[in-house]
Image (tube, rainbow, N blue to C red):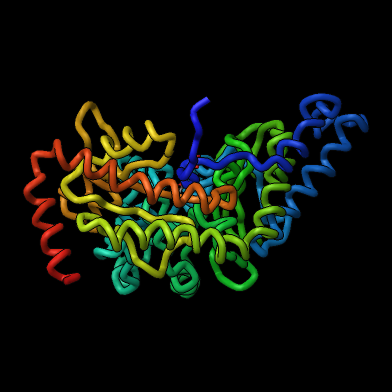
Length: 399
Ligand code: PLP
């Protein structure tokens, strides 16, 4: 089988072996329904609550503040819709232009259905301007929903300051922390963020499971109605194996958090610095420092990102591009567009997102092969003259 070198961990992660092992009994001998009266099912309720403690622990929350969901998308939908339902008199929402579609598309839907939405801009490094947020707040602002860290660039937002601004104005603040949990420390006991979303498959648990943190006292109405599960806040028979797995993944995330800051960051920096230092048409998208330790988003100017991905794929390297293929035309990502990345660079952007499972040898393999990939594409690019000009400028600077 072809060797797979996976550096697309912001898309999804490998399920940790410890997580798989912890989940297995709940597919076979322990298949009961946690809501059942008999001990066979009822004993699972304790296990779910143990997972709730593990999830709460990784974000500094208390277990009663956690509800399990089907993933990041549901958590985002539930937070937004649940806040609006609980505060029906107010109609204004603030978000940013660089949110994940799980937030942005919900807000855009609401804007067509009776709400007013302000989308905050970002600067060329992907950073938010807090004064713009302060100016956007109105008497009828009900919700601020802004992500913790961007999935494409890894840029981290000043969510603690946003939480304080929201609290001072009595506005609920929801934060999509899907990319942050497990990569940087989060402590809800030390900030005023009202709600955060997290997703299992971004932190080495399975797909289709997640959680929503709702600070005690925050007004919220359930988004999914039905039975009395999750303390009447999210109906539906619990996805027991995945919830157990999410709990273990959160415990592991806490254990390996220091490694994210050191080893994962070191490997990311090695890859990034080597590419930026040696390839004249490469440029970094996103703030150099205020960033997740595992993510680098690099544009190769005048080269097509999809073509780079295909050649990397032939080498067994799985990364992702900042372009979304929409109806046959290649549209640069909304995040890079919001940052004002020039068209010629936005089209050639590649995101490498690494994890604790990546090795030095893998990073060296990418460093070894990427110049050849770009050279090959340069030779067939209609912009090869522009690339040569960048190369000449770089060699003049270095001599
Ligand atoms: N929010 C962010 C920032 C994400 O990166 C993702 C997934 O890519 C989601 C939400 C959606 O999470 P899920 O895939 O669990 O629905």
